[in-house]
Length: 445
Image 1 (spheres, rainbow, N blue to C red):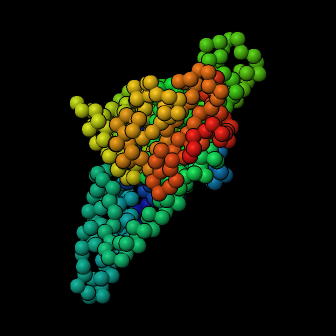
Image 2 (cartoon, rainbow, N blue to C red; image 1 turned 30 degrees about the vertical axis):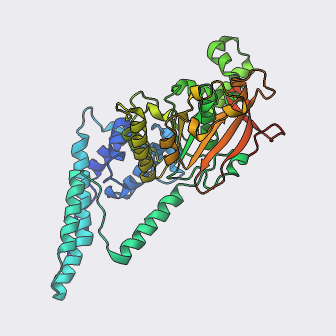
Image 3 (cartoon, one colour; image 1 turned 90 degrees about the vertical axis):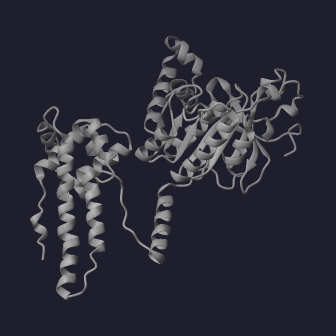
């Protein structure tokens, strides 16, 4: 029988790979994005532990330093900081990482073949059966793909086993990505599913009514409940959008710390610094690029294990190309729906309400409706939840409710609609505030 002790850890090669990962963020990303490398690819037990700690840091977006590594190790024995430094010290500039990754994979494949596949083949031959070599051939093909670094492979199962495997994978994936509410209790009570993976929420409003501020507040509540969020603020840009959260958390008016920072009181500066620190410790990832595409999103979601994706404004995605806007939006929304389901994330996207449909209307008639949304048919088709935002003082400066924003549930798949929830809108602090109970003058939902 094959002797499994033939394949021993290539300590030097494994140390070179790990040393690169510790020293160079690009090398770390290169290894982490290789779907064929896991902790099991390293044969030395100590190196498996170091890889798992690095993987945890990578998932959290942390950069290596001794203190961070020790903290993330949670007191697991990885060999000590001196051992890490020794691995880093042995790395020379321009060392061929790809070669060492290839050797790493080759050693792993040898171990798998010697300890799992060949013993089974030898057993079949010794018993005298007409050995079915198909599983061996399939496994060899899998091993070949690992060495080539081509595509991820899976064992082939059929019948009831396949059904049970699919069901188990389905349940495990969903258990790993917890259900997340919007964390606005009065709004959540109206929802059937909330921010559930695979669903799309659309928020629509006329420009200036509070779409971006509402998105920022939802993002803030998600990440402060430790829900990983990818925020793509295409409408206002990353810095301006982040300012909204800083202002909301710190209680300092955003215009003051953006334009008059030198005039701020010491306590206000302290509150801003505290807010920035709090936000930096949360699972918030901001990606702001004029060329953002669904391909970019897919890579980031996989890399960062995102739960919720927020895109403000959907029509600014670079995938949206074509001559007839309505047809293009409809086609791309259909693709985006499939994308959301395929990657098992919840997506919150914003859309415009057509300003010209509001002109000349009385106050009550200016409130959002399905047919007032630009490209309404396409958005209504894909949206599991469609919410229209309205602030009366935008159209009526003399309103008796200048600081109220209305969230109109215009469509909800398998749930109540229409409905309306009111909140305070604290413009100076970019904050959605306290719930406002409905009064006699409210619309009869």
